[in-house]
Length: 459
Image 1 (cartoon, one colour):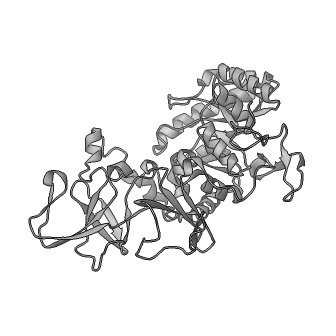
Image 2: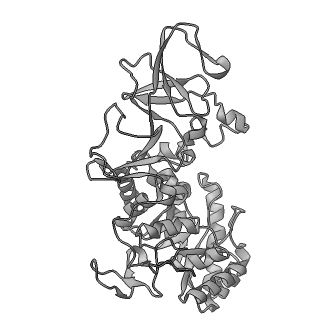
């Protein structure tokens, strides 16, 4: 592997991991060999880069934070959280406010809800559902999360770059050079076939360490995983390897919000784990349920649950929200914001936007906001996404439901057709709206541009 003049691995973006796990020590002290046990029997890697690491990669620009909500530019801009109406201190056409305190609160709520016997594995794939992978990962690591789950090796790399030391589960099998990097990053890869056994075994030998793997069984998703009948033979291959350790067995539910469907997959999964056990191989940590299935069927929680959506204050479906919102006090964690760039007074009968689809019925004040389809505005929101809007892409981009913006603490409808980078909001009933006012918009989290500045608060 190539190295730069300072002796750091280029491909690992500034990180160099030792051949054995290291025990944490105080700042500036050399770490000694060993591992540190954490919640649930998993082992937290130690000796990684600690503190002071500027988030990079998927995160986009960020501002660091103080307790209580004060935000600061990394470049040393004036201090002070911006919770008022004006947004003049923020550069760019849009930004995202992320409440790390709410994420921490939600994690604690869920940990108490599922109980001590069930490990809670936060899923932070997709840039932590748009919140910023590294900042969220650090927050959950400090909360003592036993493991973080992502899909890709590059996501694991970003977590290690941020100094995060807890185990990282890869939900997709790493192939080729990604297998080598997964081993170097001390990730815990998904394994689903004999080629994976061979690739990861060779990668582990090349790097010179053992690798903990999670065997994935396809119990009904039809996407990734070994067939149930082949799970035990594959587990035997893992057990016979000198470099691979079977740490867990897992699967994923296709219809987590439907109890009969979850129950069917649970039966298949349990049978697969029992077949592995019969071979004299402990299946380790058994995990089937993600957010929806974990709420739908308590029996599906097994040894661990993989929770993403719920940690970020959202329910997988409206029906689950209705059932559990009294038991779970989940807080909103994410707000997409922009500013008013123009306010116009229009006479009755004036058309607004492409296609003249909206006409004013009275003297109206229309605020213009520099956000549109390119930012994800106008896409079907998560709460309405399942089963109600199944038309073509064109209908998704031109929805027939009303989008609502929030200005000065009040709701206002988005009127006229949302354009590529522009939207218009009827603020007639909100007194005093002016250029520069902050606007909160209903943009889907996963469609929001990852390069937009994230402003983190911790309240």
